[in-house]
Structure formats: C-alpha cells, structure tokens
Length: 156
Image 1: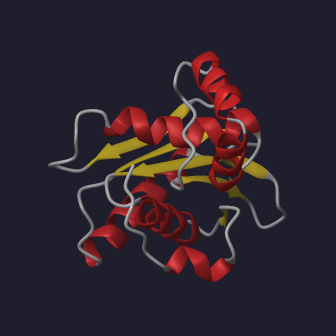
Image 2 (image 1 turned 180 degrees about the vertical axis):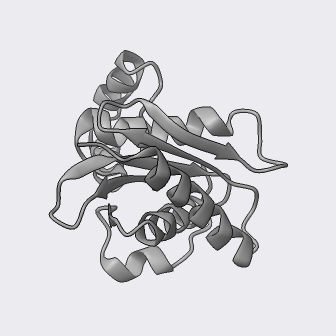
Image 3 (image 1 turned 90 degrees about the vertical axis):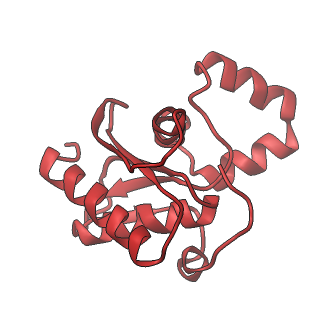
C-alpha cells in the first residue's frame, strides 16, 4: 500500500497553501511512495533550481534509512564520516535536517514520505506536516507534536 496520486496532490497543494498563508519563502514539495518513486512534486515560482532535488532527497533519505530526519541529524553529528559515506552511497539523496516526513495511514502503515524545502528547515517540515494532515493522513517527524509548530533560523 502506498500513497495515491490524489493523496499526494492534496498533500502538495495543502502544504503550499499553508506556506503561502504564513508568507514562507517559495517552497518545493515532493511526495514519494514507499519504494522511493516520485508521485507528485510542485516547485513554487521563485524557488531555487536545486529545490526539487533537495525535496526529493529529504523524503528519499527517510525512506532509505527508515529513520526520521532528526535521527539522521543526530547520527550524522555523532559519526560524520559514516554519514558522509551513507550520503555518497545514496547519491546525495540523504539530508540531515528537518523537512523529510513519513506519511502513514490511520493504522500506522507506511505510505511514503514528503520532502519540503525552501524556507527554514522547521518551516519546511511544518508545511509537509500540514499537507499530510490535510490529506487525512498521519505525519511522522520524530519531533514532539508541538515542535512542528515552531520556527527555526536554519534553512535547507
């Protein structure tokens, strides 16, 4: 079972709507199925050229490693040489900052992942979470529930 095209499109649109309502920088959102295949992607006007690759990498990395971006970040900080090797093996499709979010159904089954980029990493994550919730699905970030409502000052 994987995220459907209709769900993926809803996630992307709702995530972008969330970002626009908060005047975030232009975002790019990517939704991947459980096999890491792109289902839906949107890059807002003004978003940088590399943003689609970054969004896919955020989502692909969590799927590929089976752990959330926050845990990836902790492991990268603890063993930077190992993380560099993993990123190289993954063709650069692993990032250690928030913005890659697992998508689950109400029963907890994995359906895919969303990657968002363009504003601060935590704002990217907030937009992904909002999109997932709007599609009636369950986001998993590795953060405490209220952490995704805060903003940070680092971007990726």
